[in-house]
Length: 151
Image: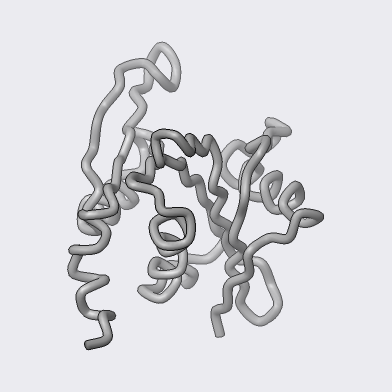
């Protein structure tokens, strides 16, 4: 069974380092001042979402995530994952940065309602950065949320 937990202040550093290690193995990175959500299956951490680079005046937050199992990406996990910035924090947009080398995630984000912007060389001389932006209107009206609405 998949469950979620918002990282407590004394846990966020460890979750941030765990997600960073999945994304950038061996680099010793983390996300600095951030919040996080752990995705757990049978008491084992299988994925984490980190909310960072929050700009309260703009109402924008960046999300970075990683997992060791594909089972974490459920409709309910997506609902909880985006409810935090859009409902709990009243953000007007969420940003995700994605490598050129992750076409599966590109496809998922596009289907979910994200708009893609390509920034040349932002990941280095030979790699573009793909900046995906999801507005609160696109999130609220996407087919995944409409199916979950209670009338």
